[in-house]
Image (cartoon, rainbow, N blue to C red; front, top):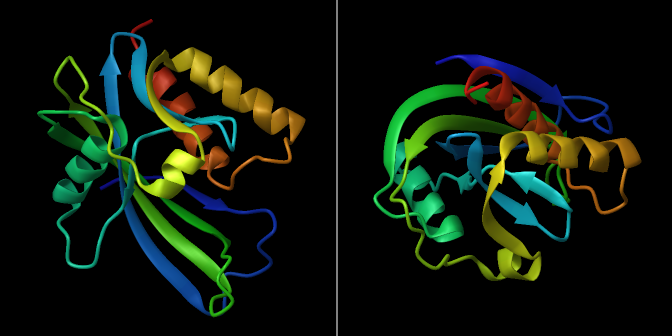
Amino acid sequence: MKLLKELIHPELSSRNGRVFRRHAARGIVLRDDRMLLLFTERYNDFSLPGGGIDEGEDIVVALKRELEEETGARDVQVKEHYGFIEEYRPYWKPQFDLMHMTSHFFMCDVAPKLADARMESYEVANGMKPIWVPVSEAVSHNRQVMARQEGTMGQSIQRETFMLEKIADELVPA
């Protein structure tokens, strides 16, 4: 397994204290120069589909579940582990001082046609939608949101934009 990056949120003063630990699996699904991403209206950003791994859940099972729920992907084939990011950021629950999240990224293939997504209520409320988009367009959009420091900007945009840039450089045909 390859560490791609360690991200420390700028508002985090220390990595000491009460830590909420989370593991996530995220899918890299490419078709030529387009990628299956999630656009979230609330945060005005593009992100890779995937999410938290439940206690005792196999990482590949979790990834397939998340891809199916968030995008409607069918016949998910997990090909290879691309790498992981270690992330430290403030956490909103008062019993914790920070969150330490490890996000694992996997190359995946899915059936050509997506079924209906089965998102959780908060994802629907945030205006999350699956979309096939050119990777360069997603990178440009997220960079603009970060440059403007939009008030609705989510904490994950740095991680997502880093990954989109890495995918554009290493995986998208020129």
